[in-house]
Amino acid sequence: MAKCIVSAFDGSENSRRAVESASELAKDYGAMLHLVHVIGSGPVPPALARLAEVERITPDSRPSGPQNVANVFGNLATAERSAASPVVTHEIHRSLGERLLKDAEAIARKKGVGSVKAMLCEGNPAEAILDTAKQVDADLIVVGTRGLSGLKELLLGSVSHKVIQLSPCSCLVVK
Image 1 (cartoon, rainbow, N blue to C red):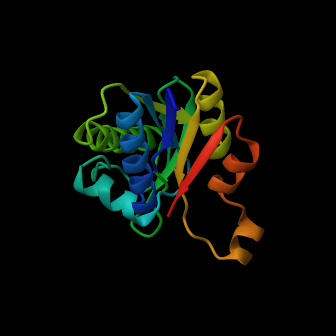
Image 2 (image 1 turned 45 degrees about the vertical axis):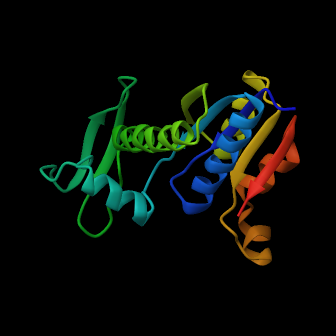
């Protein structure tokens, strides 16, 4: 019986299904549900870029070309924004992550989960999910899969595959 469940959410449909499954399990077992989003860096996938646009997370008034910007930790980072290839700053990644976690938390609450904690992490996604699972002493990790073909997964690897292989607890992969 699971008392603590970790579920990762990146905004994809498969991760949404993973959060739904984790939420149902958490409700059934009365378990604590930890929702994790790992902040990315560099270009944002098209679906998330559109969300940032719609939610007005990406300001239109920024100049094109390289800009020095202070990130949340006070360090300087160079970011570039242009119509052809937007490179989104740490601040925008963080804002997107917070928004995605709110969506995931809403899914869990709608499913009737009593104890939910949303966590924004940074770094390698598989490592961040595994570190979170260890920190909270999780009994179960629930993740979605991107459904890469065998060859693509072999060449690129996948977060869900890495989590399964290195997890200290049971895992559920949702398609």
